[in-house]
Length: 120
Image (cartoon, rainbow, N blue to C red; front, side, top):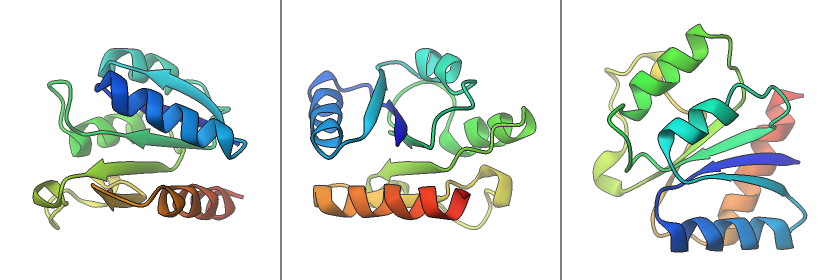
């Protein structure tokens, strides 16, 4: 399973990459929203993990833009409890799943596998 991780904290990014790779995921890491945006154009990713804490564009705006551009890969947002979405974002601005920090890594693996099954 190919996963794009967009995470601006280098330590968290490396930890996510290592943990996912140890579970057999193929991981592409983007440390900036711009880099992630470029990688997101690749249709071969099975899922995207997005940390909303970086970049000027908030996740609902970014996701609406991606969806308008034909990007339909499932997106899992790693959210602080205070940044969980409200109902004003609309369906095109919502992620496919949200995982609040801190989280057990096993829950992340489960969500990714569930998103991949949903996509098939």
